[in-house]
Amino acid sequence: MTGPAPRPARTGGPARPLPRTAPGDPHAGLRDAVGRWFGATARDLPWRAADRTAWGVLVSEVMLQQTPVVRVEPAWRAWMERWPEPADLAAAPTADVLRAWGRLGYPRRALRLQECARAIVERHDGEVPRGEEALRALPGVGEYTAAAVTAFAHGRRAVVVDTNVRRVLARAVGGVALPAPSYTAGERATAAAVAPPDDDDAVLWAAASMELGALVCTARAPRCGVCPVRDVCAWRLAGHPDDEHAARRRTQAWAGTDRQARGRVMAALRDAPGPVPRGVVAEVWHDAAQLDRCVASLVEDGLVEQEDGPGGVLYRLPA
Ligand code: SF4
Image (cartoon, rainbow, N blue to C red; front, side):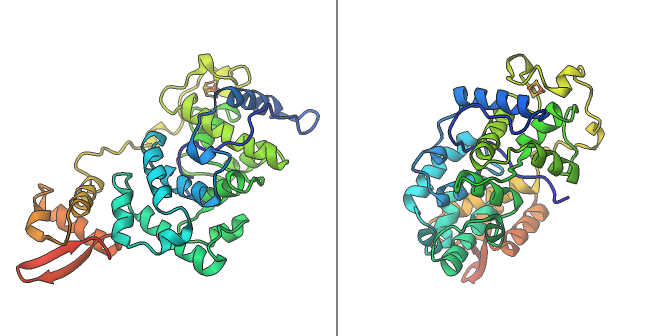
C-alpha cells in the first residue's frame, strides 16, 4: 500500500440522490442515503463554487491535506486572489509564497505547490492537466490529490479516498471501528467497488462520503444517532466493536516536538523583514541541540537559507 491518504472533506458536485448502479448492488443503499444527506447539508465552500477553476481545486486539496477547512478557507481566498493562475505562483518569490502559507503548517507543501505550478507552466502551458497519470507526474501530487482534482475539477470518475472516506468505509462497509494504520489494497478495492461507474455519480459520491466523514462519522465521536446511513452501517449494526488496531495507533503530542520547533523558526523568519541573526533564532526555542537539528532540517528542506554576515550566521526565507 502507499500510506495514508490525505485529509479533509471538500468539494461537491450537484446534490441529488445517487441512482442504483445495478440490481442487487450491495452498496446502493449506502450511496443513496449519503447522497440525499449531502444534498441537504453540503457546506458552501469557495472551491466548490460553480466558477471554480482546476487550479483553485488543486490549491485547496494541497492546503486541506493536513489543515482543517476553517483555517484553509481564508488562506485559500487570499492565495487565489494573489495567484489566480499557476503562472502567477510560478513567478512569485519563494519567500512571499512561504509568508502567504503562514500558519497552515507543513510548509514543504508550499514549496511543492510552487514547484507544481512551475511544472504546469513548463509542461502544460499553464493549464492544470487532465487525467490522473498526468497529474501524478506533477511535483507534490500523489494518488489522492490526482484523484480529487480529476473528480472535483474535471468532473471525471475517480476513486477519491482520504482519511475521512477510509473511516466511513471501514465502519459502514467493513464493520470495524477504524481502518488499518496504513492504507491497504483491500481498502482500495472496496473504495473502487463502492464508487459508482458514472462520472457525475462518482463525483457526487466522492464529495458526499468525504463530507460524512468530516462532519458526522468523525474519528473520536461518530454521531450515529443522526447519521444518514445508521440503518445500513455494519459497525453500528454489530454493536460498535472495539478498535482492533488500537495498540498500534500513536497519538503524537505537539508540545516539545521538532514540528513545533520548526514552526517557531519559520514564524520568526516570516515575520522578519530581512535576514535574522542566529542569536534571534536561538531565542525562539529552549533546547539548543534540538533547535540546531531543526534549523539544519529546514535548510535541508529548502525552507530556510543560511549565510554568513558580518556579525555571524544569518537565516532567511528563500528568495
Ligand atoms: S452509523 Fe455511526 S459509525 Fe456508521 S457511518 Fe454513521 S456515524 Fe459512522
